[in-house]
Length: 140
Image (cartoon, one colour):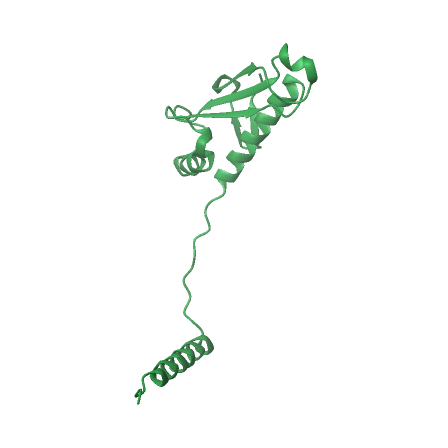
């Protein structure tokens, strides 16, 4: 297996990636029962120093159920009828997850409410108050 190139400055060494194959239930007719085409790609995120801590933490959150208790990301594909294509699909999914984790989160910059929105809010409150005041009358 070759290194997984994420972008021009980042690659996961081939030694950190492990793959194995199993029988899949996808398309293929009788071929499914005798050929191991389902691919599973594993990467030990907990013991890898490829990503910086912030991106690693975001990747843990993005991985969800694909992250094991030991910190290994497992990605499975059984869409295609060939081992190679399923393995490539796993590699593409892992690359996509890592690229998403590398994006820094956008930080919300708090802004003040506009003068018009403050005026509308107070006007709406006045209307609601008048409506409720109108309900409290004598029931004679």
